[in-house]
Length: 336
Image 1 (cartoon, rainbow, N blue to C red):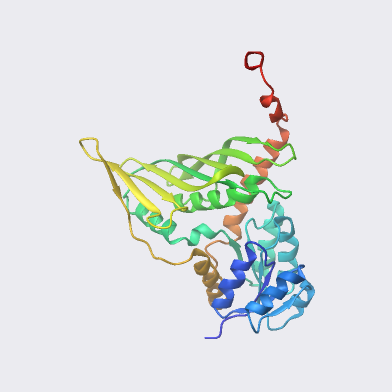
Image 2 (cartoon, rainbow, N blue to C red):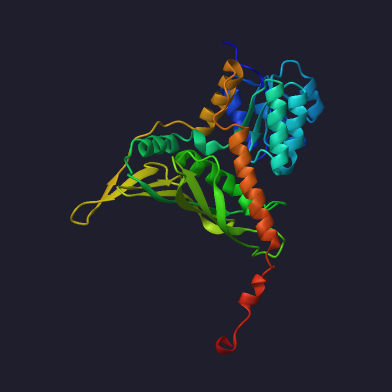
């Protein structure tokens, strides 16, 4: 079966990974970027792949069946909209857009044109995440009590969006997927602009997840930071029987199940999961959806709820009084 040919728009820090995977799958036809030096590198590394600085040239290319968008998030909506109008299937890195109305418009465009619209919620293709989902469904953890996702690193490439738009889409999409919850709600939010540049770089969300019959609520929390020099990517799911910890910063044994013996000792199990790259699985799924016409696992509906939550959180944070964190650094009388 001949694979659909795609064009990747944006080959920066993350886009280059999409370029690599679609090239290895034999589906990459064109790479588009505004940086000619990046394009020169791509042309040298991937022989036969065409490069261009013109997005319109991509839309006019009859060989290109699908467009893969890996540009700054404030450009996602317009690039995706033009691609769908141009009758191209579309993959957009998270978030799908920055406005819920834009998400709805893109979904409507894709539906009326019978085109695939997929969002890059990468962790839903992570083999350890999917193994954990199976364990939860089998009752291995018992009744779920609490879920928390910590995603922290040191990021100097600060642009015009907050840490929440950068990191929280991963956490919210993964937690909602594991809990089979379509409509999470934020109950409390906190955020700090430690650099005094207008960007929230440390934040937390308390989230409620209505699940199952009768809308049983599972509480959860998301913690994000751009100012932690020690990278942390960890999910904790507490159950009545066992607690699962997925530590994605580890090379091996990312997924562990913790439980107590009757005598109070701790037992740790390491469930096996396939050793495959999540992004490869995600890219392959996109191509399969184009061929089969099936709706992607990470479709516009799941993306809509993530954008809805983050838009609400952004409004709450902007309405809060600004705190000058530099005041905390002033010496007190007792410390002078």
